[in-house]
Length: 78
Image (cartoon, rainbow, N blue to C red; front, top):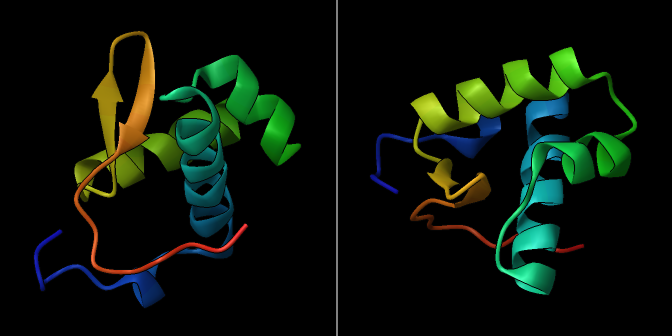
């Protein structure tokens, strides 16, 4: 992730979704939408909106039918 990215600028929902992507990526190599909706306890629309924002900013990248982590300079504890 470039230095222009500021994780503190993300909303609580975006951070929650990012953490779910990170957790599922570590466990299974990627995160699918159904798994993210279950893990986050949000509506599919809310998760899709957040994932779109995370992809636009490079935090999350499309990977096959799901998502993975983009380059980053911070750690996520879960």
